[in-house]
Amino acid sequence: MSYVDGFVLPVPQERLAEYRRMARKAGAVWKDHGALAYLEAVADDVKPGKHTSFPQAVKLKENEVVVFAYIVYRSRAHRDRVNAKAMADPRLAGMDAKTMPFDGKRMFWGGFKPFLDL
Image (cartoon, rainbow, N blue to C red; front, side, top):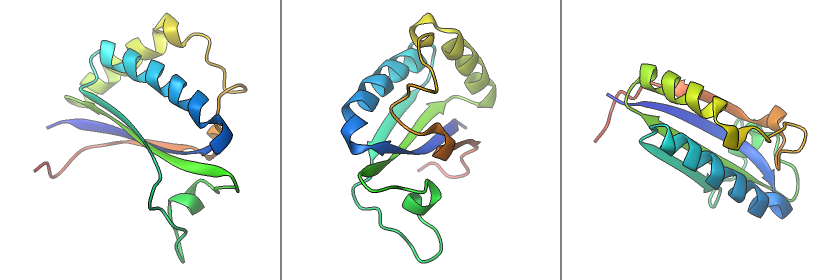
């Protein structure tokens, strides 16, 4: 069964085009190194909840949007190999946390083992 990395992060609306360019580059790198799928999506129907929600999880500020992304791999071992190659890829060398078009401190992510795939 496959393995999935998932990400949720806040992006300022005025930097969304810049983020999309960065994501397009990152997606190409991950796919070139073997990722099966790479998807980035901007929140369309995401409201604050009473206890928790996507906006609350990233401490969404005014004029920001939530981005949800995932990458699919054949297995966790495959993910580890792809990530190592992607992180060493020179196309990502210029990326600096201080100049990213989002606040990485409010981003969260993790690896997931699917238990149902219809």
